[in-house]
Length: 122
Image (tube, rainbow, N blue to C red):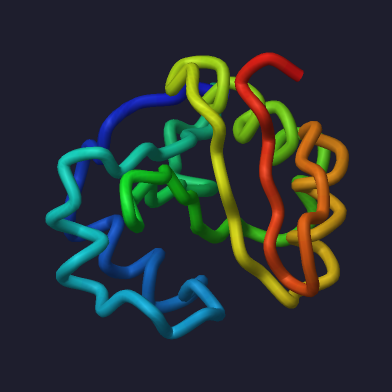
């Protein structure tokens, strides 16, 4: 997996339409124009396979994103690498079962209902 900034906004727009974030919290233009947007590309094909949208709420860093289906181990690695690079406590909100599995395997703890946190120092 190659982790990089968004390389091609047209490719990202198509990907976002096909694999939208299920929270409906962010419109596509916000995500596309987020300078902190992080994308994961296939090493062989170079195609976009996942993205992470970091954002702040009251000074805390949250992440959201989406991925193609069938990439659970790679998604866990992607999230761990992003959290390590951000080097802060990271929060996420989701009610989606597969997203919860990814977060749990990436070291996030469930704080309440749909709120998760991955602490910087474990």
